[in-house]
Image 1 (tube, rainbow over the protein chains, first blue to last red):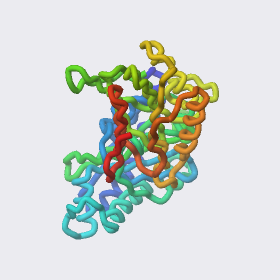
Image 2 (cartoon, rainbow over the protein chains, first blue to last red; image 1 turned 180 degrees about the horizontal axis):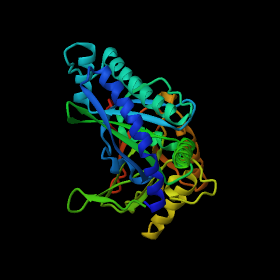
Image 3 (cartoon, rainbow over the protein chains, first blue to last red; image 1 turned 45 degrees about the vertical axis):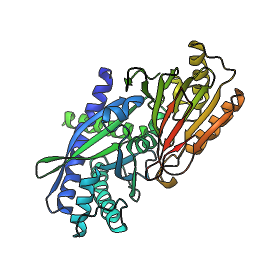
Length: 208
Length: 165
C-alpha cells in the first residue's frame, strides 16, 4: 500500500471503531453480556489477494449478509464457524445444541436475527456519526464458500479499482477470541462520502 | 498472473487462481479457485496437456487498465497469449467454464453472474474455441479444481456431490 492509501484508510479508523463499539453494545444486550466485538483491522488489499489475506481462503462458513439499500454495492457479512454458530443458536433458542448437518428454521432464524441486530446497530452508528442515510436490507442466511460470497461483495469496488477496502471486526466471548467476524465492505461511493465527512468534521474541530 | 503456488507432491504444482488472476501450466499443474458470480475460464490443449485459467470478475473492461484476467474480454486473449508463450498453439484448444452464480439467491446487489457467462461465451466463440464443458449459474459458490494432465474439472458445491466435467 502506498502512503497515501494508508492515510486514507487510517482516516476512517475512528469512525469504524465507533460503529463497532455500538454494535458491540447491541450484541452484549442480545446475548446477555456474553459476546462483545472489537475492530480488528481496516485495510486496503489487492483484489487477487483478499481472501488469502483475510485467512479464510476456501473455507465453508455460515454467514449472514446484509446490503445497504441506499448504497448499492455496500455489504456487511457476518461469518461464523459452525460449532460456535450452532452453540449461539442453541443458547438463543434455549434448546440443546443440534448436530444434524442441516440447519433447521429456528437455528437459521436465530442467526439471521443476530445478523440483523448487529448489522443495524453498526449501520445506524455510521448514519448517526456521518449523517449519511444508510438503510440496511433484510438479512440473508447462507452456508457457502466464504471466498464466493466475498467476491460478490467486492464486485462494485472491482468495477473501478484493483484494490478493495475491508473493515474487519472480531468477536469475543468472556475475553476469549471467537472465530467469528463482521466484514464491512463499503462501495466506492460510500467510502468517498465517509472520507469527506471525516475530513469535514476534522476541519470543523480544528477551526474551533 | 497468479504467482502463489504450492507444491502438493514432488511433481504436481497446485496454483490457486485468485480474483482477476490468470495462470498457465503444463501436465504437472493443477489449478484451483473458488467462484461465486465470477467465472473460471480454462483453456486446455488435450494433446499437449497444457492449460491456462482465468478468474473473471467482470464482463467487460471498457478500455480500463488493470489485470487482464479481471475482465472476460481481456482474460481470454491473455490466456491464449500465455499459452503461446509456453509453446501451446491456439489450434486444438478447448474451453471449460464454471461459476457465474447469482449469489444471495439473486437478491443482493450488483448480480453480474449472468453477464459474465454471456460475455465469456461470446468471446470464446469469437476466438473459435469450442466449449467442452460447463457448470454455470445457480445461487451457490463453487470450488473448482482443474488437472492439466487429464483435463478433469472437478466442481464442488456446498451440500452437493462433487461433479467431474
